[in-house]
Length: 411
Image 1: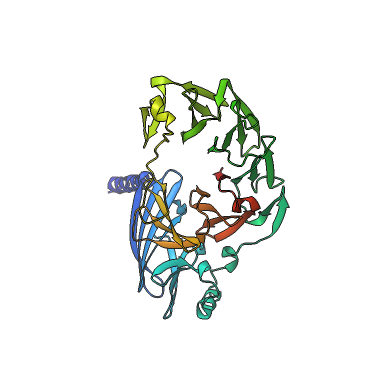
Image 2: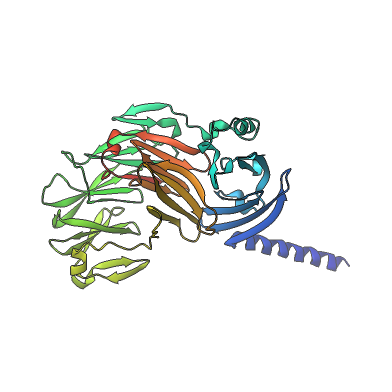
């Protein structure tokens, strides 16, 4: 009898171990449950992809609410603890309360046949505002920008709204501004050429590096500037022959930047992490086509052929971006008068459309995981579900020159 008892214990331990291993290596998981005073039916699907733990939720009320959260939860399931609910003739709203009483998304509302966040509706309905004030778990400060500013190198920085380990690069006429909460001075103006350059076409970002050719030269250059956005270090890559200014950036793949010299019919593979470059010509030249490398002939290269990355296209939206592969979002930009309305939906669910914000400019967009950095007027802003919209920096030239660049690197 005692032998059987220990065998059962051993089998139970093996079972638990197998369950743990299955949970640890499983790429997807799902759960359905009922929660809240209104007995809401919740469908939850989790996707685990490296460092990304992405959760899709469907909450059925009078309307069906669909939203996403990028959060660890230690791979747990049934992560919504409670749902707060508001309903009147105009609005239907929910606030999901997650484990540990955390609020990871703003209040989600259905109004005028679309879904949006409460930060877009604040002060528009007294009853809704009073409901929000009554929620002990919800803190308005979480979704309110702090707006304490400091002017550094001619740029107004909203220093308390900067996000730790994010490095914000904004182009200027002599180089870039490099802004981060991790820096002692918050903003560094990195000058790379001695005169104003209004359209630095021969420049690109790759991971934590900014790469731009030597614009101190007029017709040809043999040096390429490299800026490390994290360390603030600058260096130069030297070419063993002059490179024509009649060149263009073909694309960026695996941290390497590809530049084609049309006059000399040479392709350059710039490796900023090695501070070096390689050259290709003739049949050795490379063309990146949706995940595959192909050969490139000089005729096509001279016509300005760009690398293909499998971009999404749309006849309806003015801009249509896919962020992520199997897990992530589509961001859609649609002109509405003088502004663009910005919507988002999950890659997994085409019915999960959410209105996020509006902006007057879609030339500057930088995605950092589930953060969206963009320019509105002369203001750099950032959107995230966990806090809504915050100001980052104000630089007057952004309003007048769409050739300047915005890029954000997350450490």
